[in-house]
Image (tube, rainbow, N blue to C red):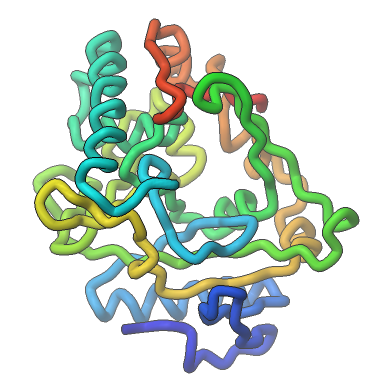
Length: 284
């Protein structure tokens, strides 16, 4: 299986994180693009697509939001899934727009707008991933209803790092454009599966994936799909991103004035459950 172990590129250095996971330290933006392209190419030969996930730090596991903090048991998963399915039913039942596109996109789309699900957010643009890695999310209210992003400050954290996870998913097309379902993973490209009236996933180059399990029990740790991890100094990450309006909270989380799908969700009368999130109001 492809990884970074044999990669030698100027502007990179091999290291290990606190969890014992191999890290490729990158100090040049050209090296970042080359490293990502290397892994994309190698994984494609194994029948996989590679996508990106930006994080402030690395963790021992890679859990979808719905399963964080619970055991890998059918009972614990069923309780969370039941609450999530009830909320999904409310939203879809009150919003006729959902009848106009494939139901396989309904749950991952709502994940993009704040619901906790079995899907995990990825992106198909390395600069968007770097933006998420160099910003910190703050939430408050019922189910994290109010969400705000602040750029991390290198002066407060001079040794800070930004991390990009490269995640491999199976290329196994279905009858639904943009939706792949293989033996071990499912992947959905919301730029294809969801109409652009829901602007946020299009602005973010939004991809979501999840691992498949046995029967109704799904893995709570998706880290077996990580193909590589890149670290960049926070100072470099912020410098490389610059001040482009498309790479800002306003650009990546368009307000409801522009994102009509978001407005439909905010206008809906839903009963939030703090255990499974809510439709988040983002200060952008």
